[in-house]
Image (cartoon, rainbow, N blue to C red):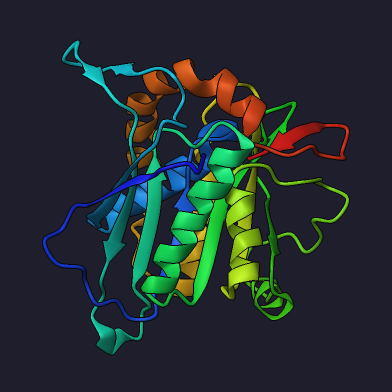
Length: 268
């Protein structure tokens, strides 16, 4: 029986976007991707476009600060820019969880790729963490992708990205990997930006998120307030910690990738 995804529009009229880029950041190792995209949503005051629901969500709910039940959220946001400044518009995929099994992950990513094609996305960027056995002082950012030309463009001077990822990580598991695989099959180029972080299920990789945001700002010049970024991310960390405690063990077991270096264990 096919998996059904409830996709609910959160706007009265769909926006017209200018060659948008889709950036994904869902829970995973150190919640690096989630911290990255949550910051973008807040900093850019992005507008909620869709919310998603499926019975492939984890079988639990949150208790919020008002002591009431809250169903986990998966949402897509958009941000339009003044087209005179040549900035590409954004679609931002954020949420509290990601699908926890293979079938759910593939079907969810199919729906996201359909939306990306509907809005004529020119690029998909997925984000995540590489789990180390220690806390890195200055996390390195690695890049891989589904298109050689696009991948090479991220390795240009000043992009703050390590040149070689082969031999560092193995398979990328979860939405951050499958979106790129399906994107290639459906004709959308994409890259994954993966930052080092401590691979403990209770650790939140704010430093890794900061490094990925620096890469995005250097490439696209979205006007992010990088000076205030640290304070903003710490605030997000505090809000996120309670939720992460419930999901960390399950997410880390299902969203990540084996790493070949001795000091690292997985990514996601």
